[in-house]
Image (cartoon, rainbow, N blue to C red):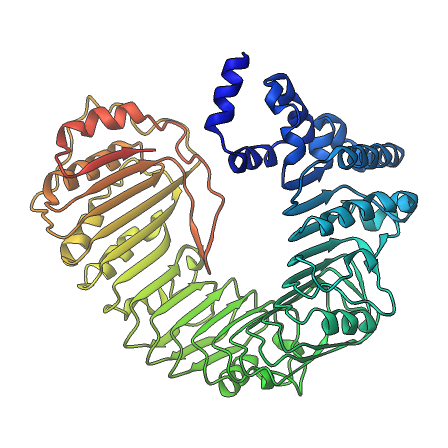
Length: 582
């Protein structure tokens, strides 16, 4: 055993050992002593210190903590004792990061010296990243005061700390605080924010680039003034009384604001000439500010706006004020009567999960991609000669007189992703056989399984689009009672006469694809697509929802049989094509 230990020591450099030990909990770290005498004290040299309630106690015990307050208090004391004991024996010369995750509150103030000693030792050993995650999952219900510690321990002009995350802990700032000179990222989560505290931080953190205020309690109006700040996030906030936020940040590049509840801050954005990305989630953007501080924004996301609260049409105001917009996303709008979008610079437009809108008119000469998942009472007009990529959810509009919207007129596009119901297959085929320029086709089909419906209609579309290079098909069948492959070997296979394709390279089949009709479809492609490089099967039926989001997906085929698929197709696969079954 000793010889084996020496061999392992030689093969694993200190840096590798440190990385391995950093992934282990404290309980598991101590167990390494039994594997090797040479490792007996190695775990005390780890450079990334992670003190997590879950890796210091048994999992079953930790699961009970939110339900039993007296049990929480007992574990808090034991947690801090174990942490303190570890640091008393810690022998490392360098600490790169410190992470503490345990619910602590004001009642643990007598133990605050444990946390302060930990941070002091980290600061002395060159720590770069500190995370204090001290919130209860049921913090608001328990009515507990936040943990407190003194910022004195972070003082000094030569600190190496660049990342600081404070959750549910109140930093007591001294009157003459001087520290955090090299801090670049600051996250305050469940923290009471006061203007004098922010002023003190901004005056000291002269290199601060990224500030996040997450679910904070704002005790006053805020004025954020920082010449170094690039990214600002004010998220999960609640506004009960009228509050103002003045933002004077000359180098600000991105700003995200997310308010929970009916009211939002009144914002005034000044001198943010570099601001290019803006994300807003809330019921209302107040006038007269509106979009006046967003003149140079190129990417914007507006989520949850209610037209009934707006004195003017939000969409029209946006495109009249923000002339540099290239990428626009509207999500979860309600009560927006009309959307009239006119923009010569717009490249990407997404309208996702918006409520019933009377009319949508889009006139964007340079629009390259368009995504729509919603409903309108009337049709959608799109004038976009440069449009090449479209996502459309027709299944959601199944009862609408215009379920395919502008798809009927966009025959020049190259990439189409579309969700349809099984009842819409015939109409979609009728439309897409007129498309000559498709290069990529993604089909998401949802509905009850129809044993009489084959998939040769996709080959009709492929024949019409001889430049088509990729087909992706995801099938989600509902109310399945029997396997799709029943009687497969007894029935005569169908063939598609006359199909051939020279450009098709990739075919992906997902979800309920272990069926006779899908096997026949794949067989025809393998025989007649001369440039095919890969055909793949998988049982996961993830659907695209727009704006980069996918459904979680499920194993859509209860009778997905890898061996059966392989046996039926293996003889038709020829190099360089690959058959992949997930």
